[in-house]
Length: 187
Image (tube, rainbow, N blue to C red; front, side):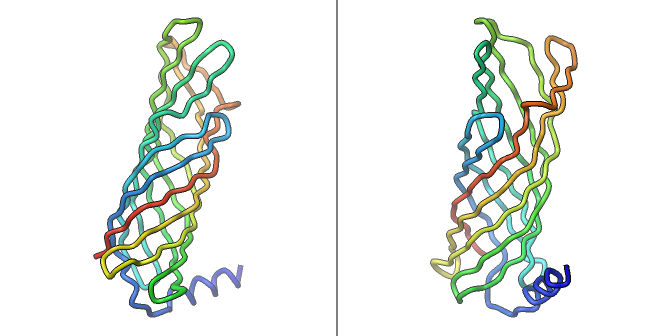
């Protein structure tokens, strides 16, 4: 624990010319435990709080996380709205590595078809958590490219099927690794 605290203090005390603020867009991949892999896109706003410490707000859209069972086709749409704190460490004048974690609110919509019939199913929106680590490389004073790995912890706890609420803690986890890559306009 002492090493972690000392590392964070050292990273925060580094004085670099790194521009910490920016707005970016990214392509996204998410490999969930109980649903198929999903592809989407998103945007993020990055605000520097102190040298080496940034706050990000990000949103994404995954239109089709599917789970095709033998007797049902399940299509899940997820819109994460997330906030995180990241610690940056400059490794060159034009590059930095970063890591951190955050919390998100995940808007979800589900379509279920069983035996050729559409079911009336509603899924609750959920709160989840994530850890993130990445690399940001400046290509100019105003533009950077970034790539990041992300692990999300997210469970679907309840669904409403034909008006009846059902607890579904098993086989409905969206935990999993993801990756984002994109462009950041720095200011």
